[in-house]
Length: 414
Ligand SMILES: [Zn+2]
Image 1 (cartoon, helix red, strand yellow):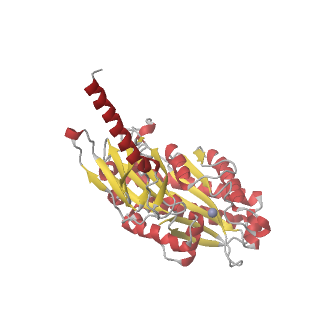
Image 2 (cartoon, rainbow, N blue to C red):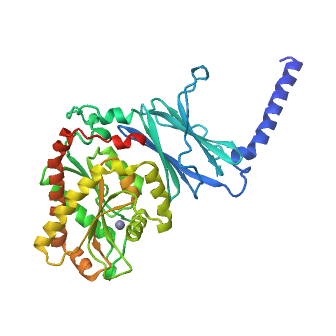
Image 3 (cartoon, rainbow, N blue to C red):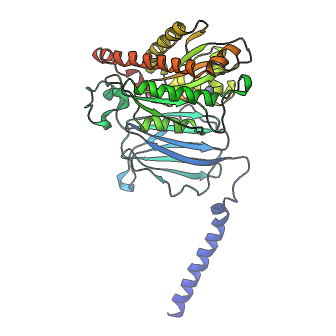
């Protein structure tokens, strides 16, 4: 090698080493300014109608109601259509520079990079895009971006799907398809006992027992049943809804048992998702969401923004049928049944499910009468049979709803 070229090559290597040295602190994250929020994990979930992107942080990030910015494709630069969200005060360093591939026909992938020393940018590379919804959750702190691939109004008014094709069981044809798959979600589990009642009775155990009995009762009525858990294990809310979505459930029933400082309080409540300022309902929602009552505010605002009230019509119908059969049937078998009625509340697990969803509070484990009944397998089985009867009645109503041509037009804004 001639001397000059050798020198030039050495020079290039030296310069490269120098620039690498300068970059080193940045690469290692040493350059991280203090007081920033760290990214714990990016998760994605692909479903028939949408893809869910979740970014989990180690503390709360202050974001606008919907900070998502759409960018059109730039073929010259080889860039697809994108969405981006700026995350001020968030540090991610170089961890996700390579991106997280998705490749489900809707999203190409997700990238998260350090844009400035104090701002990260989440970029979603799209294959198809028709709309999205954005919200944040607490405990743990995370943002959720659901990306939809087809115009929702168009799908809402689409003709009934071919029922032999499981892929066609799309979310928005739910008014026009037969109800066959019920997802039962026994609340809590594993390290999360839920409410702890009289005699140390754990809510998670009561919920599971009732869910397993309900499964049997529903199968006897020719429903397909999927449980989010069949044993004593911990699941977060996303895992619960992911199981429901992957199973292409037609309805989602979350089973819980209540608790109150007021030991006299007893009775059954059936909830569906909506805003509600009633103190008791907010307290129940906070406990089931695993957050403090004050933190329910955030979900209330999101519900208002996404106009969930209209979309929850099917859930309200479902609640009406299940509540009716449950309370009437129990009253025929037991003399001291207390009914607290159909209620609304801001429950994350209902909000994150895309099918008609209700949450049954089977009774108060902190009340002596309720706790005794909920410890009785026969009582739980009567409950299960009556919830199943309610679902049977709801299923029988489904063709009538289809005949009226009701779609989920209320969800057009999501
Ligand atoms: Zn619970």
